[in-house]
Image (cartoon, rainbow, N blue to C red; front, side, top):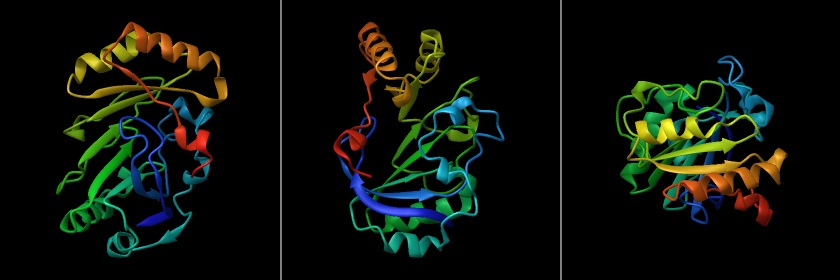
Length: 202
């Protein structure tokens, strides 16, 4: 597996905000090749390079996890599907709960499934791969172009998923006002703030 970084911190976004986790950030992203517009406001551009970081086996990655929950993120972690499946199995053998953050364009690999799957669909199409099998949370970044109907359609298609709306940091305070208004108009949705940035954490 090509790993950009492994570190312990608090989850800063979404449903699990404030929860201690080990973060495993994998290298490589398919956003630019797929024509996703999130490249305009991505805050982890260093993760785009598939050759960045260091090469580690899933066992070596698992050995660096010392908290009861781990969040595998990127980039796009499902680009390394085989290594990810092995890592999930190794962590489950130690009773570690595995969270996955993905842009939703790629299917899950066969094998053990992460315990929590956060999908963050991107403009312009907000398309999701049918092979995801399960979605626990849909996290949408609220930028100037986001239409309420887009989120409503995602919520209707995935009624089991928690909807989290996250203001685009570079467009605040306008994006924050839009996100708050959308949540107030749809009380089952929730506001997601990047509290790790507010607290100065990684």
